Length: 469
Ligand code: AMP
Ligand code: ZN
Image 1: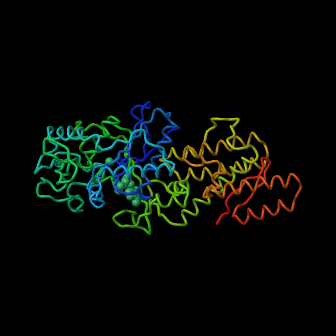
Image 2 (image 1 turned 180 degrees about the vertical axis):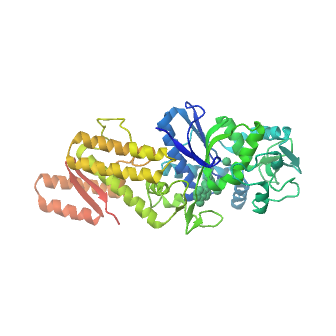
Image 3 (image 1 turned 45 degrees about the vertical axis):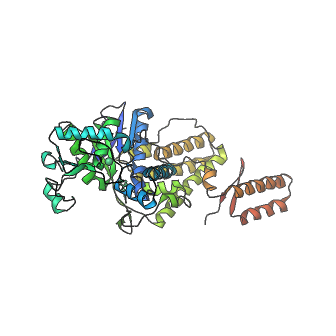
């Protein structure tokens, strides 16, 4: 199976060939930890999680190294700590923990490495000093700036010229800059701000330096895949690339650059600054993470995705339909059944993902497998059912979906009290039925109905689910 990925740098879909198939490397820019992630921030996490799973499937789990950084030094963090009157570490620890909790709930595997910027400050200082020595950066008023005019190919990733950048006013003009597009590698800290010693005075690194240093130290150059949201192409990734090329005589930095499109609401990018954010941390109280994950994967990662209530409804219904087939199958052959044909390939889903991570097509592949499962259930051949069930759940695993036992899926949202009440009533009902006491059995069914529960009888006994609203 060949994998094709769209590369932002060459602007084409290309065959994916890693530098070393025994060590495939991927880096995705991670969060700045000063608040809860919004669902737009979760889009790159989930999209690149699917790529991570696919690479592990293709190259072997031990042969894929995925790093996602944590930016734990930033003006917004300082501001948040000052607002709350707490230490910076309180803020970063709180939101890093919340981030991981939320991304776990969305079914994202933890990356192999999660380097924190503050653990790499000395390495950043060394790298910045190296850039100055090579004539690619200069010191001015306690700042160190990257000299964009010294970088012949500056703009190669985003396709902008230096003139475009000034005209588009995407760069900050400052008196100490030689050119308005020059960007900060190191800056002085104000009193009360975190600071580290450097040859240019106490201060802290700029954001772009963090990633280029950590990529090199954690993964080694060149990396195979560099990912993030489309808004990172310029200036963040352009600047990471410029630094790496300056430091290594123009050598390759990342072999494939991948960028996800925006998640929008009412046609506008979801962003903290616009204030139109939906926070998984809150949404997850009402909606299972798997529903959010399905919704995030329902559009191709490079396309915009409009976030609506009806998207959530459709995603839940889609999962209900497929889990329904799995539950019917489990009623015949039992949960956790082992396929008589293990290792059979998850063809439609694998093919779709291998074509630049086409998740909408992969999700329709799950529907196809679920329809096939329904047909085998109708046919009644237990081996065929077990095998079709296995195909569906292993295809789901590639997407990080369908790994919940169907009974648990349908009982999602039921509190422990309700669960024990229902289980007790089901035992009484089974006893009544065994004793042919039909009036009691019927009365208990009525009680279950009143609790908002549907009972489904099968050869393995009765199972139940929460009634749909
Ligand atoms: P930030 O915290 O803004 O640096 O964003 C973290 C990650 O989320 C980056 O990869 C961004 O490109 C991505 N991102 C932020 N907002 C959105 C959005 N509305 N849709 C998709 N990706 C986003
Ligand atoms: Zn980055």
